[in-house]
Length: 320
Image (cartoon, rainbow, N blue to C red; front, side, top):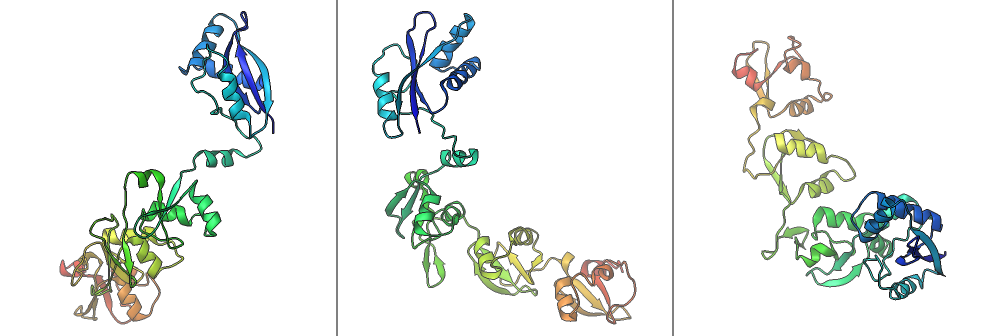
């Protein structure tokens, strides 16, 4: 690929005012400069081009030298050093050279790469990587494994027995490390984690176990499924999800909200049994999901499986 070092000159005096580099046709690069100058962006070269345009004149572009990708930066610096009255704001080697052989998506991705650091379990630097995708490719892990570990766990999760962080976060000491021992997480008192713990209960409100985040709850109970939204909704409203109740707070016995509890009545409207949820009753009856819905809401006033079914709140308020 050819890298063209060029200059922009005054039309009347032929004074060189700018040195640049491009891989495009010179006339295309000149059109770019004039278009940018019309926008009045405030850079030195734009102000110079604006002054020419206001006088009805245009800059003149001229080829100086053709280089390859290994030499263009040094040659651009050399040519910039030969002139005193330039509008360049850098000494060279920082020209915007766009590789048109790549798609716009590829160019955008390269432009947004963030350096990442690989750390040992104590937070000591092992290696600096140009990006998470480069590290993932060389270490032969999933394309997004390292990036997900950084974004979702901020140094808590191990990938290839290493912790991972963005370089800028590492330099600001934004650690959120946790130690993993015997399949349990023991928090290091010198560090911290913002993840909310999740407590799991059966349909009767009895405590079962504790998880250290919503993500770990899903990984353990529902691997490979997209249940995060429904689980967070269950945590917020304290409704059942996947035959369990979940809470951000610990209770010896979880109090199930009355509005979700139902009661089974005999034909004389005497209570036979109370259930923590409609789902619990349907599991006991071995019927399909939502089979009791119309009966509980009063849309059907006859017996189902030999019993009447109502919400506890309606039964206690005599709304049956």
